[in-house]
Length: 243
Image (cartoon, rainbow, N blue to C red; front, side):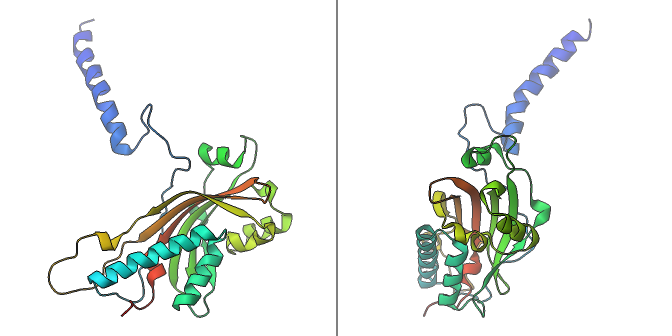
């Protein structure tokens, strides 16, 4: 019994520290808003920095932001991100030929979160596969993406290709005539709105990711079959800065 007066202060201290620890680790708090599709970490050894260095001037910062916004509009206007990126690379001379391919990261693939299952209308017994890829054009990494999809809503041939090859998902499922519904789009870098370093213009330092999308792909009748989390790299600016 003599331990009770000693233990009570310790228990009280633990209770006080628990919420702070939860905030530090990013744990959800009671009553907090949870996103529809939580973005998972995307570890990657590839360096997507543009192969061509841009000078850091007000004009190039404005141009970089305009290009990112233009790409964003193009992605929102087309159901296939792969096709949009190929057209982008062809228009700006990225890669020769401008052919986008997927590099799969099998080590990072995991079970689908409950939020994703809900978006796909999948119960606990419905298989949902996870495909984590980098989309590249030549040596340039254009995007990193997590794709959760229902194999029961694809053909047997499509599933075989997705399992055995690194072919981009959008190319494989193109015969489905799918629709894309964007859940969220975020401009991660807006250089024209940031202050420039003082002094002579050096190289424009670009972040790893410049744009992020979350989307759902559906059949023409509205049946969802894929949930996407995409992050586009500064590799999409791998062409000479405009004069």
